[in-house]
Structures are given as C-alpha cells and as structure tokens.
Length: 376
Image (cartoon, rainbow, N blue to C red; front, side):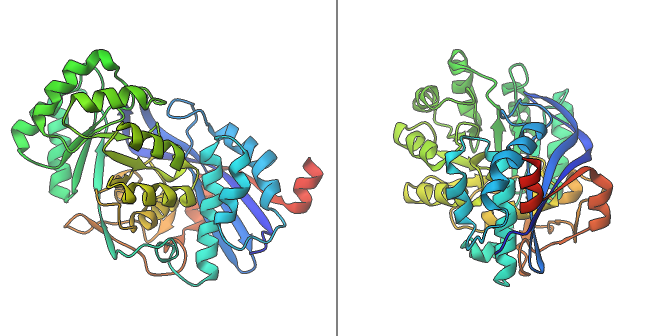
C-alpha cells in the first residue's frame, strides 16, 4: 500500500442527549476522522479524542499536532505491507495512543479493502454477529435511571452499564436490582473512588453486579489489586490499560478479573489484538468499550469484537442511540434480540455518507509527502 495522501478532518457532532459521567457532561463530540489514500482505495479511521484532557491527556489539538509532526512522516510516501507495521513504527513515540489509533485504523480499513475482505475477517474474527450492551450516563434521580434502564431493556440490550459517582452509586444500583431483578448490569466509576471507599464496595458486593469498571485511579494497578482481594465482584480495568504490558502486569498482580479494550486507548487494532490474545491465554474475558464514536469508529469496534474472547457485550450501541444522523450508510443497527450483524463487505463494511461527513467537518487538512516536507 503506497501511502499517497492523508486527510485529517476535525469533526463536530451533536449528541441526541447529554451524556454525564464523573468527568462531566457532554452535549457534543469534537473528534477527528482520518482518510488514507492509496491507489483506488480510501481507508478511514477515527481519533476518539475529546476537546478536554479529562479521560486521557490527549485532545483534538494535541492529536493534530502529533499526527502532523511525528506520525505522518513515518508513513507518507512509504509502502506499508501490513497495518502491524504502523504499530512498530509508532512504538518509539510515547503514548498519544488515540492519535496513533486513527492512522492505524485507517490503514487496517485500507488493507482489508486491498485484500477484498471484511475487516473482521482480516483481524481474525469468526463471529457473524455480536451482542450489544448500552452505557447509561449518571442520572439526576433514581427514577430517571429506572426509566432509562427500562427503555434499554425494552430495546433488547444485553448488558446495562450504569455510570456512578460518590452520592449516586449504591442506592441507585440497588433500585435497579429491586425493580428489575437479576438483569445483566454493571457499574462504571471512571476512577471516582479511592480505597477509603472499600466498605462501600463491600456493600455493592451484595448486588451481584457483572463487574465494577475502573473504580480507582486512572493510572493505578496496585490499589485495584488490594480492592479486588477484598470484594467478590469482578473489577474491570479500563483507563489503567494502555498496552499489552499494562495488561500483563495487571493480570499478574491480580488487579482485575476482566479488561475493557478500547481501540483508541490502547493505540490501535494491532495492540488490541495482542491484549485480547494475552487475556484469552489467562482466562480473562474482555469486552469493547465505547467512546461515543461516530459510525467509523463504531465499525472498527464491531470488527474487533468479532474475536473469540470478546465474550461480554460491549458498548457499541446503534448509531441512532446517539446521533440524529451518522456519517456512514447504512447506519449501525441492532436487531430485537440485541445483536449487531458483522458486515461482510470489504473494509469496515459501511459506506461513507460523504455529504454528511462534509456537513459535520469544521476543518480539513490534506497532507502528501511533498506538502508535509514543505510545511516542515
């Protein structure tokens, strides 16, 4: 694949509804779409950054700078035989995983198209469909939460993830158990707690949750090991895992029993596959978390979830859950049984709605090997 041109689009999409976590409330998404051109094909990737450095240190502006100054010079004008090469080329650049994943994701889409195969197939997936869960943001009242859970169950979602924070945790979760019984429900704390809350988590044990996701600090694996030993509910690590090495250390320390794999957080599909394989070898189930992706990022999530050890429903809900209109066609949809069919057409399996893509684009930058050399 001769990399002839790269286009970076700064995107703005309004969410249908405000989405609240312990980080704050989002009403819109600012992120990046990457297009990589080679011959007659275009590969598409998504950089799942935000406008602020609250989930990770990356933002839209830092991702653009890192991409232009450090990532693109490594691939523009070069022949890339396989997307794994990008993982190796980018390895000397520390962190900035979301910027890396956008380039690498576009290369995976491009590679699958040149092979005339679905992305799910080229990453090694075997499933024909995946089970879908949903993430419910922090609600103002327990009654609001119960309404959202009831609606999600009616729609057929296979797992209910409830965001929590101090003051809106055990009583909210207990109300869900009391009303809906033994449904598949989990809690996501987004690092809002410390070991001072250990007695609270022992109380939560009685609710028989599927897991508690990232209860402690975003960069911690030590205190999580202490907490996991003190409670029966499986801990799932999210923000703490940025590489296969992070996953190895967490598994060896006993910091978790489940790992959430987000393509953007770990730097791309190649690293996600490594983490998947390591977890499978150690009997640690994994699932694919969401970052409020557009249809392009959502399509990459669907492909990676086709791997065998993604045994827990992920957060890749249908497009219409979040967007009035998505940038792909057809949009991602879910059947009444809570499953998404894995596309069988080449690449990510969805066409790009170029008109809608343009409508949501607030800035577009084109790079070629020559133009990049001139700008530098």
